Image 1 (cartoon, rainbow, N blue to C red):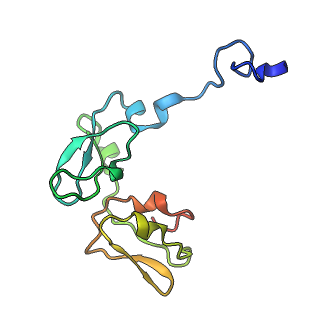
Image 2 (cartoon, helix red, strand yellow; image 1 turned 60 degrees about the horizontal axis):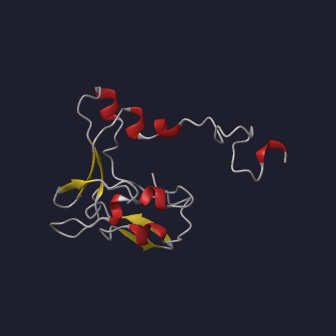
Amino acid sequence: MPGGFGRGRGQRGDGRGMGRGRGRQGTMRGRMGNIPENCICPQCSATVPHQMGVPCFQTACPNCGSAMTRQFNLSGIDAPAQSAIPSQKPVVDQDTCTGCQKCIAICSQHAIKMRDKKAFILPEKCTNCRICIPACPISAIN
């Protein structure tokens, strides 16, 4: 078969793999070496070592039971890289939101409510875990 189809080999048919991708360079760990990562509780700041393959929000805090978020060890990284970490709480774009409620289902702090068939975030309840941002299928949360 031309092109190596059905033989379990790369596109070249020589067994050297499928692609020349960039691998883990696109991740925080890949760009900066082997940086230890932790899961941190947004409520009580308890930390536990991150388990590869298990999203932090699926890990419960050993102290208070709330969902954990990712914490990267940023020691030794220059100041511009540290300032790139957002400190502003997420905001829902009311014009873009379709009211699908996927962000409400993922928020462990119950900080997202519906008003006029649109999601909005309660800033006093939001812990800035930002798990709602990738949960939104149309990127209405920034």
